[in-house]
Length: 117
Image 1: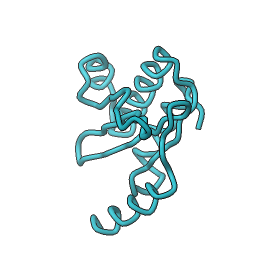
Image 2: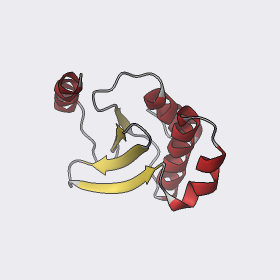
Image 3: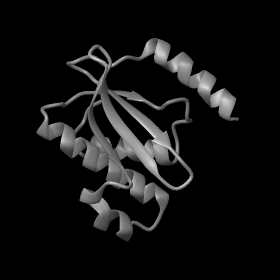
Image 4: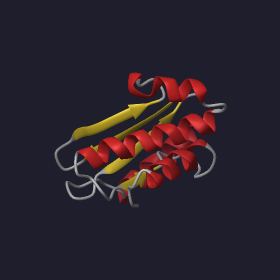
């Protein structure tokens, strides 16, 4: 299954890239945590990062009942940080994962936070 995800990731990355006007949200999930970054591919730099281990949202993560809730909190936090830097629209890179569960939750949280994609 892992090899299939990596093949899907490569196929997706051929079509999706982040620019200065519209950076890319890259998502990674482990068994317990979820990570997201906003990346400008033209410069090759990470603009913003957030994860379920971030100290700024530690209290909200502890009060979340499930991994889905944690993912939504991370998405909202990422969107708030993006708004502070003046980023309004992004491209969502699901990194080969299916768009459901925690991946969908982080996208929904980012949309609720004010990002458009």
